[in-house]
Image (cartoon, rainbow, N blue to C red; front, top):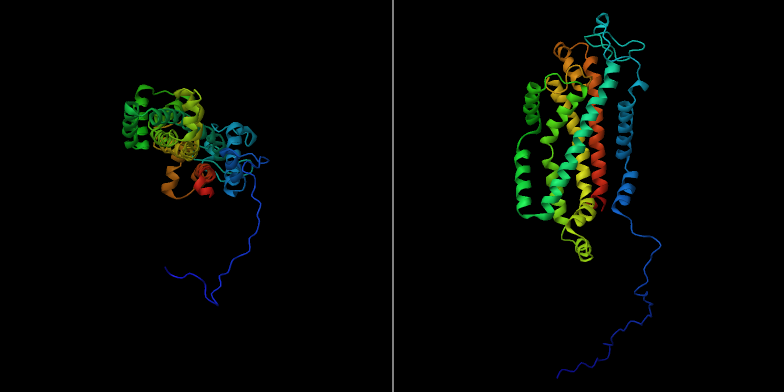
Length: 324
């Protein structure tokens, strides 16, 4: 047996013992209750200058949409050919277009059609996509197969191309559309082919959530499948859907302007940014009097930029990885 007795000069150092009081096992700080995901997201948004910048711009756009007469009293459909391509002057700060319409009045009133189409399309697409995606991800099986394959088929068709074909068919069936008829036709054409993206995102989120402990706990307490789906899964699957919907809103506004620019979107009698940009094509080719194009196109670009920035800010606030 080896001799482990320390020799002279090999004394071992032993640290002095310190008595440390351990906290009680059940001593939990309840003075600060846990915050919900939405409260944490709001805290993150409040400190983001991009959110406030985009929110202020969008608030201004919404005021223009709801109360255009606060900004101008000029009738956007009142034309005077004597003012054709007239320069800015007092009372008409943006000048006149080729038909003698006041550009400022048409820019203000044109916001309503474009923004309403974007909002209605986003609302329909979000509801349809969230519902179908949640059902597909939760139940699986043949239900998931049917919904997923249908979404793949619609997703493979380019949105703008599908809307052009759909509206061309509607123009033959419904040629004389008024304001709301034109808005409804564009919304239907965009919504029919716009839902698959939301469906995919909602399906993935529900599939990730449905096997977590809180779902099993709700099921053990007697919650039915549908109650679990609508009470627990869909609310927790909303953050990525909201982010996508916010960004898509700007995309749909651009799509409406593109369709109207091509002459198959809103009727020419409807005041919209797309129709005004289309009417400014001669000025683009000639290179003069570009103010006719600049103001409606600038309003469109600023509105879409605001929605894009808002979507980025909301994504950063609702993404836990981004917050870390």
